[in-house]
Length: 388
Ligand SMILES: NC(=O)c1ccc[n+]([C@@H]2O[C@H](COP(=O)([O-])OP(=O)(O)OC[C@H]3O[C@@H](n4cnc5c(N)ncnc54)[C@H](O)[C@@H]3O)[C@@H](O)[C@H]2O)c1
Image (cartoon, rainbow, N blue to C red; front, side, top):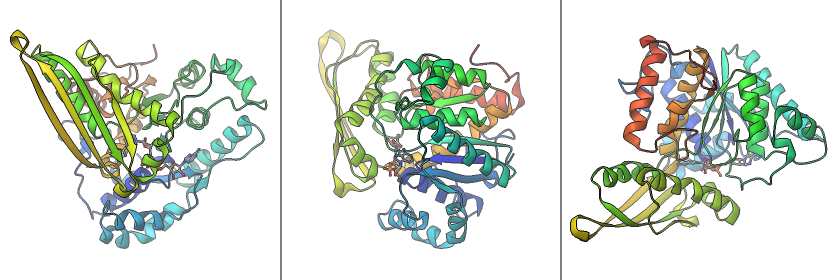
């Protein structure tokens, strides 16, 4: 199954690491460590092979992909030997990167994205293209009457207003082009009534939001433990220090607020109450693409005895995120091929703020994901309609 992976934010750290990783896997130069779709519970014939993935994308920036890969190699995110070995393949992907669309209205810009997507699908004779948003985190948008339903949206987009934030405009264009859409960021994406209705109309699946790769991943394992042992979590405070483009974006208070909200949801929904404390994100340029998170948890046990737990996470964000981007491309392509429509809640395992899923617990999310994969691989009827 020849599958296009169209990355919005294609020259960013996560996208570049995903492209380098995908090309290295295809060439047999790297193993699939970190790719959960290569685990025995998920692997199978319904997924496109790494060799079947073809990359393209949009970005506002113009830095050549090879230069971005070299910068990531310099900062220790990817090995230099891989960048050297796949230089020609990276140049071929460069030919499939497009500037962010221009046009007088948002309808014109959406039409330009649709042309880019359909051109890509036709040039490479792809069975389908999965659009994945890995661009900079946006602030929450201002409400607009065009968000209410598809007719209002179409009318509003033809006018002069900035109706949709960029993540949603790309999502809208993806739906028009017949492409499933995955949001790896905390941005709005398809989370507007007009767009979820359009996804249903277009009979397309979609997934999100905000890849779960570090502190929140650990939280989604620890919080169920406290809950299952009936321990009373009194406070949970975290500080995240990060550099890189993502860190610079999150230095903006509005983008920061969108991210912090996405990171805190797991506690309230897993514990059933919100303990004291919050999550802070600070930009430290020196850290580059590496991140440190410190968490302090205080909790009470039998007879009220107070106890505490601390953890420190030192992660390389892009190296943690990129294999999940490849996993999401493969699983979403398989879901689309199986005729699935609407939010792919079974992919909640991958996200901090999963769409419509009843659980934030990593263990329960894993059970749902593996069952989903079993059905996709022919273990039962997988063609149900999520939107129904
Ligand atoms: N790395 C992780 O572990 C992780 C986890 C969860 C979510 N995310 C999210 O993934 C996203 C990417 O992270 P990153 O570290 O690659 O950031 P980055 O800053 O390196 O890359 C973002 C890219 O998006 C581009 N961009 C911005 N606005 C755009 C637009 N309107 N159209 C097209 N391109 C646009 C930028 O030019 C840049 O190249 C962020 O939103 C981040 O919050 C990352």
